[in-house]
Amino acid sequence: MGVPSWGTGFLYGHRVEVITVQHDEFIGQVQARARLGSRGDAERVTRAVLEAIGERIPDGLTGNLASQLPREIGEHLRRTERPDRDGTGEHFDRNGFADRVSEKSGYDGPGAIFVARVVCEVLREATTGGVMAKVRDSLPPDLRPVVMAGSSGRMRD
Image 1 (cartoon, helix red, strand yellow):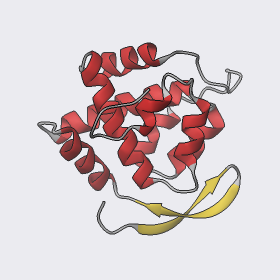
Image 2 (cartoon, rainbow, N blue to C red; image 1 turned 180 degrees about the horizontal axis):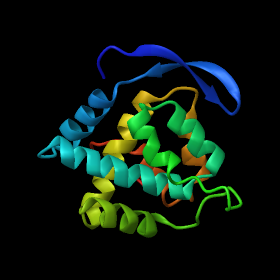
Image 3 (cartoon, rainbow, N blue to C red; image 1 turned 45 degrees about the horizontal axis):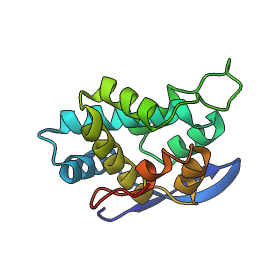
Image 4 (cartoon, rainbow, N blue to C red; image 1 turned 90 degrees about the horizontal axis):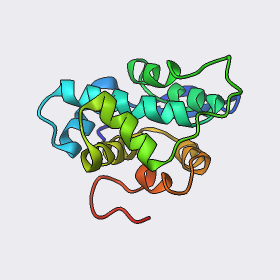
């Protein structure tokens, strides 16, 4: 993804040096890899996937992931944090995840899973400190391949 810049972030309460990626670069990568027709489409699928992830993972992890992303993109995760919950995230499986992404992105079934794979691939490249491995580990087994599969090839269960 282009030339990264370094910044300071927090991972589980510890100050760490992180690679920062710019908003336009992140969205451009999603658009190109998913072969979407417009930046607006890329923004919409990015928001849909991040909101679904944010609803599923624990609140503390949501904040850590958001802190490593451009402010505008991280906000999609921050909006899902709810102080009134027990902080563990909602419980839903791959089908529930796909339904949420589909509802918010306009892509159905396999299309929703594909755009989720693309957004997660860009997330892995834009974050450090093993945060995406922590995201993967917080998900149920049937949803982990979606987060880790990447945008090309077959997804293995």
